[in-house]
Picture (spheres, one colour):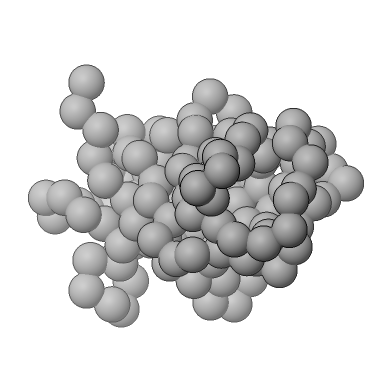
Length: 125
C-alpha cells in the first residue's frame, strides 16, 4: 500500500500516515522516516483476532482506514479464512494477512477489523 508519513508518534518507531483510503498510525519497521516521505508498505496485524468481536461485518461498500481513540479500524473485503485461522482482508489491490479464531463468517463481504497494533514494513520493488 502506498502511504505518506504525516508525523512521528510518541512511541518508539510510531508514525502517523495517510493512504488513499484514510489515515492511521502504526509501528514502522525499517530505516527512519520523515514527515512527507512517500512509501510502499506492507501492513502486519500481529494480534490474534476474534471473529464477530474484533472482525465484524459492515453494511458499507467502501474501503477505509481510520482511527477511533487508540484503535485503528481497517475496512475491506474478507477474502478468505483458512482452516488454521489465517485470514485475508482486501483493501483495494492490497491483501493484509491476519490470524483469527471464532465462529465462521461469510466470505466476500465487507468487514471492519479493529486493532490496537499495526506493523508496517517497507516493500522493496
